[in-house]
Image 1 (cartoon, one colour):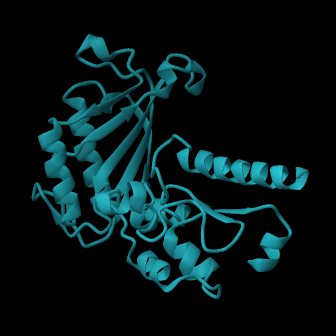
Image 2 (cartoon, helix red, strand yellow; image 1 turned 180 degrees about the vertical axis):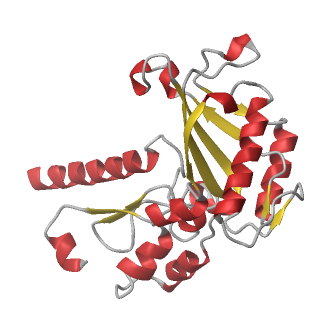
Length: 260
């Protein structure tokens, strides 16, 4: 790590705290409190994605939603809270909150003419399903083929309450389980797409760690970014932006000193 930093202006690591301090910097002089915080960093609920090819665009029973590219199906905040609690307890939610994306509404080139597609995201599933809240799906602690299939059927049935022709229009379905997500992305530990729980003690000034709520590290020239750092998981690119500001500010200070 030292030789790498000395050859460049900065090194930016977009990894989890455990990967940074437990693997990449395991032999570097890092304060004990930071290593302890990294070991205690918690990951949140797992996520699951379902990608569906349709032979025609999805039609909602409520016409107001026909041109909406992204919406959520839920029973309100109370229902989502129950589903989150069930997933936290290791159970498959009985009534999952479903993020329904139809990107082709904005970009028709994403699907063949006259066809449709769905991008479904379930942000409240357990990493290891040990129970089914509805008592209808057999589980063994893994996302085996039968558990996955039955849960996908539950999700599709929930959508079909609002779009009755969904099942008959499906051409092909691809499912990304929490296990698949973790295997594809080492930062998605336990299938958590947000790089760690975003409860208050791991948020804002305390993200990524209580003793390192910033993007700079104890190693000169090394910055820590990614979903595990402030402002957390999402699509804003906020962590990289803040790190870039830090680098630019440091460069400006060096320029002013050199001019003197």
